[in-house]
Length: 163
Image (cartoon, rainbow, N blue to C red; front, side, top):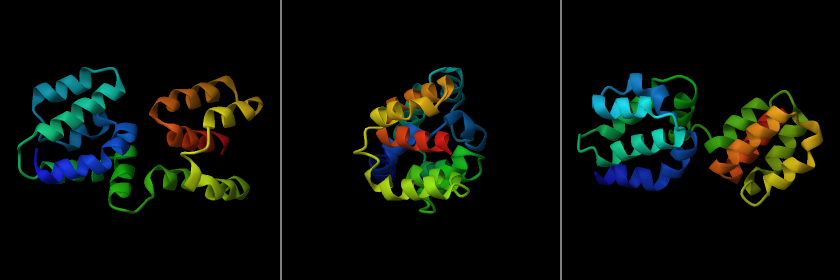
């Protein structure tokens, strides 16, 4: 693994494990061997897809692989483009995306801005149960499914749903 990929993954690996959707960028990433591409597209578990993709990046000896990955993100739509914006410093990880959703709801946006620095210390499982009477079953299930990605991700999901 090249030093630049090693450094990149040490810093951004946890973030990518939460938000990367490898299938969405494969069309923009022609550098990957067909057997690895097939493994990722055939894999039904998103977490394993991400692990396979990251493993490929870490083990790839091709010069410029990191730049090719970043270009693939920039040339994709949706989450891939958003990840590229985060990596380019245009957004503050997932928090910028959540704030964007709140432009029309000033009170919730104000609350989010007040607590966003403390997202990791707030127990969103308790927070969600406290507000559960305002959430329908689908919304509760969506937040619960995000808890495996971490408390910050659950907090972001919570505010996105509330909005």
